[in-house]
Amino acid sequence: MTTTPSPVEKLRLNLLIVTATVIVYMLVYSTNDWLFKHIEFTQGIAWIYLPAGIRLICTLLFAEAGVLGILIGSVLTSSLYSLFPGDPVTTVGYSVISALAPYLAYRFTLQEMRLQRSLINLTTTRLLACILLYGLANPLLQLMWFVLRGVSYHFWSGLIVMSIGDLTGSLIVVYAIKLLLSFVPLPRH
Image 1: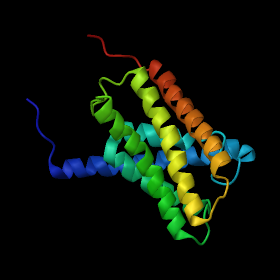
Image 2: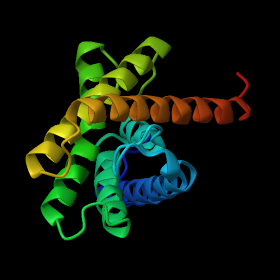
Image 3: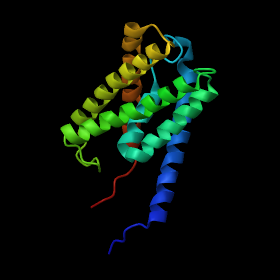
């Protein structure tokens, strides 16, 4: 006999997911900054960007709760690292795009590639398509925002570098998680 969780239990679970996503996102952002700051193309455009993978994984696993966690984590990291000092509009826009881009890739794979919300039919092909879609959509939306706000004038070169960074970061995170999961014993049937 299965019981449906109460609204309070659902709220608690969602708050836990949002909080965990914020913490993981901020930790991975800090790690990425520590590891790869010296090879950044320009501020905000990195050759390797591990938070891209966290954005995608949290969205795939937690859907809207993951998106909210990414939004909050992105606002916090943007503020803590002074990505756009004295420019809260650019910070909020950047954060919204950071949360929206992986969600759009996720929704596209749900609808167009018939991915189930439970991810039970998530194949390598679907996952790679989702990574590729996100790895191109996020930089395009971010750089359009940066140009519109006058933050960056390196549109084409920035698009190439940010796409490479988001794709490599996503692949590194996805395969690191896959490697870690290979050490988890599966239940016997």
